[in-house]
Image (cartoon, rainbow, N blue to C red; front, top):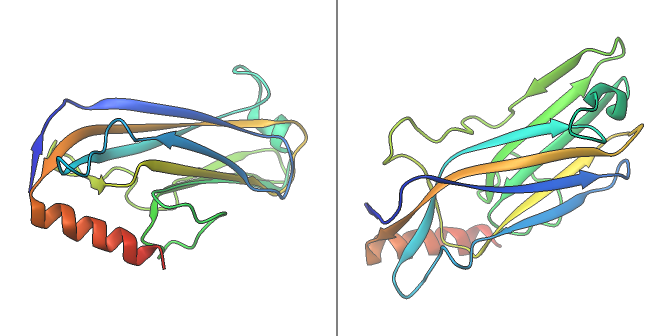
Length: 173
């Protein structure tokens, strides 16, 4: 299906959420990795989320506050907010919860965030952006989440590239 053009590399973006009950957005620009003319796509192998408080060493529970939740999603289309798990644009999703006792529970709520074990496994993206949406139900202080996308660049056959592009366009409706 795909011919590897690069080894696996990592793209990162940090989102800082400072307002409760409000979506916060960021993007990862894929314009230099995706090329329609050459049928070049980004193959995502895995997505990881790193949650941090006000500073890199801060306690996340202190900034999130007891009894609150923090959600983050990565999509390949701009939906303008959090989406349901059946949305075809959803690439990956995670959340953390601080219970009323101050214990933290991290949940990777979309399975799989890891798209396979081998170098040939992955999700193919032909759009020029990845969109990140973060949302906290309540906050004591600002929260940060760093999104780490492990990917490689691949060349697809004309049929495969067209099928992925059509699926992506259909998901936009």
